[in-house]
Length: 478
Length: 111
Ligand SMILES: Cc1cc2nc3c(=O)[nH]c(=O)nc-3n(C[C@H](O)[C@H](O)[C@H](O)COP(=O)(O)OP(=O)(O)OC[C@H]3O[C@@H](n4cnc5c(N)ncnc54)[C@H](O)[C@@H]3O)c2cc1C
Ligand code: FES
Image 1 (cartoon, rainbow over the protein chains, first blue to last red):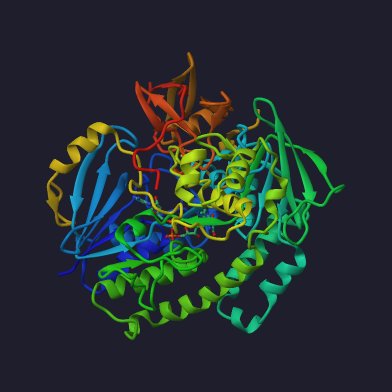
Image 2 (image 1 turned 90 degrees about the horizontal axis):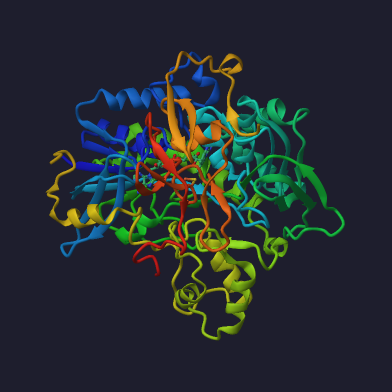
């Protein structure tokens, strides 16, 4: 029987595990979080039962049935609170996956496994563009507000401003409202004409994705319109406060997201949620040797195979497409990894769904693409790299004065992207700013900030123990 | 009061009974709900910052909320660099503000 290791227990990973089981493989699912469900179905712990938790979620029944199918299945093991901290390629071409389990960032037990097949479903995290004042306490990513509302029942503020770009701003606004916060404004950077052009063009392509459109329209109708001002073509260009957020300045943005002078307005608030799209969590895929696309997602073929033999990828690491795409890709990846083919009847509807939602994802991506001139709202002393506190002025000066533009050397000179988060938050922004200031579109050394040998810092003690840990098949726990 | 827990009496999810959890931060006790993260308990009490940045000595707290940014690190029961948004709060946990004079880096992160 094929042993499959699935990394990530979000919609993609769970769908992959379920499909692989249906096709007869044994499966082990790993997630660093305490509970399964990923970002989309982030929910309360068992110690906090609630009569109607479903009201916070979409497709909650899908989650419940996936979970029940897998949790009671002896052929499937689910290990939560288990972090994959590295993937290594061995001389014989197989991959060793290194796991650490136990208290988060505590002393952890390590283990290595060499699965027959690997399915990567590590998802994405929010991208937040730097704004003057964005390091003040009370500024969060939109996803953080969402995670606190769904997973902990906490409202991150009383008067909250939501800003950025993309349909994700809607569920965040809805969750904040359900948590009792007052959303004083939602500022979408894309202009209405651009959104209309890409959202509504070629309506026949949306057939079948219509529940997604109505889910979004539902947000607009119930949570946003009338109660919450929703402005398109606007952005937060500065955040004010001394010890914590006190206000923001919003301004109209032109088509390239440059603030339009004279349109600034100050709004009092005590929390700001920023979300300018998502960045895929690529480090394990990169470590495994998987090729990336030009848009920097994991490249997969029609069967969700990556460029590395035996390694599959599904969900937001292959494209930002929302839950339906993640579920469809997961199902195909699991089925094929277990020996099936996309021609098989059981995955026919998943295949159709994938094609449909891929097109939906493409139009959303185009409608909300980050404008080329966003950085004009930065000030010289605006922090870009939050860990190492490197500001925009420093990045510009270094880039302008360096003739040979290797990203690596620029990073070493400025220290941007070298902190604890390893450039996850600022990496792509730093690349863009350095490339812009030095007048190049790509770096001479061909590097990007996606490469991270260690997916999560381990304690030295755990690392020292790691090599001695026995290697097991995914199903034998030493 | 800005950051705060959802009032259980008005919460549309109709929460059942919960247990409380108490942690100590900078000499004060904070009460949260069992199952919350360290960050969750602090935010529920409107504490927004629990780290001081290295260079500019500025306050930091929760940012990404999902374990990616490491902005929220604290010392818990003597153990440093614990992501407050990922660590479940244990009753009696001693949480300390972290302030590192130099930015902390990860080995091998330079490429
Ligand atoms: C904070 C946040 C909140 C979101 N909320 C919504 C929402 O409310 N509505 C909506 O439409 N979309 C939401 N999204 C978008 C969301 O990402 C997708 O809709 C959907 O969850 C994607 O599914 P996925 O399975 O690809 O990834 P995810 O759901 O992100 O699942 C990936 C899983 O992999 C795990 N993982 C990653 N790396 C490792 C590792 N090294 N070791 C172990 N485990 C690992 C993660 O813990 C995670 O559980 C949110 C995104 C974020 C970042
Ligand atoms: S808030 Fe980002 S890691 Fe905790």
